Image 1 (cartoon, rainbow, N blue to C red):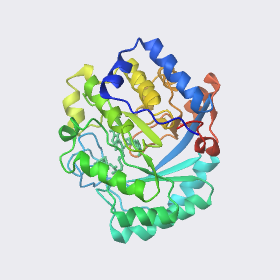
Image 2 (cartoon, rainbow, N blue to C red):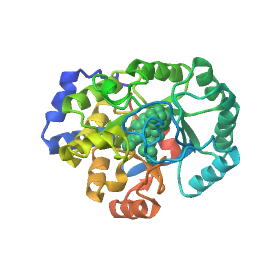
Image 3 (tube, rainbow, N blue to C red):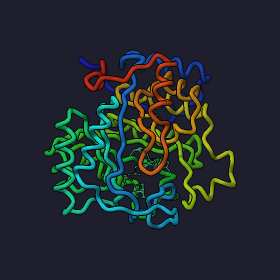
Length: 331
Ligand code: SAM
Ligand code: DTB
Ligand code: SF4
């Protein structure tokens, strides 16, 4: 019998953030150890299957057609190229393969190719994840029937800040797609970006929105903003050096995510390339247990296999086996 899921109020989440740093990290680490194998970190690989030219105006994104970022748009990748990348990811030790497309939502005509990709990548023995923008009920059902394990769809920030960053869709649009994904029986991967000039209050509200979901996301990616020249956010933030999230505040956010969502994978996502080993080690201590491997995310650089192998060796970490993730011991 699992313990009932604790429901955190915003005041309680704010109080966690206010704890002395060492108390907060120690508490998060305790929660982590109670729920997951320690020293094990899940490796996922990301592939951009359709790059650039996106109709949405997300103020941070290199792929929005609204911003002049110099990125060349491409069509949907063919299934053989996707499969070759998935084979390489598996050979490199990845347990999960995530396919991302720069769309507001997929077109019906693309669904057969997308469902074929899910089936074929899954047949290699990899967990599958897709992030394609907003989905209809029918599209979520098609992806579920193909066997998709996870759908990534981030709320990205607090409901209060959302409209400052994106005007072409609403926070509620995001929640609607997340409901469709959940109802179709696909596991949810949902998180956001830190360091977009948000306040501590926004970070509290962002984590509250995730932890208060009827079922919290199984996977919570925490991205540190990668500033992209030509995006509105990079332009605004270049004159505000203090906007870049402080490493200690980033670790605090990881710790609070771990405590408030004890059974979720917390994924250190974008921004690791510019993060020092010590900060990453503190993130693992605070409960992060998943990373993207390889030297590319979607359009930006990533830490790379060599640097990660050195980091894992230095910290005594091992790649998490896929089965270990499926059975957290509580909630
Ligand atoms: N178009 C789909 C969507 O928005 O859901 C999927 C791809 S989109 C690039 C996936 C996520 O990448 C975004 O929700 C955001 O959290 C993250 N992201 C995009 N640009 C980023 C940046 N410059 N820095 C950090 N994270 C970023
Ligand atoms: C997520 O939260 N982070 C990943 C994944 N979900 C799809 C994407 C990070 C993208 C970083 C910017 C880029 O490479 O374009
Ligand atoms: Fe499009 Fe996703 Fe980038 Fe927004 S974050 S512009 S939806 S690719």
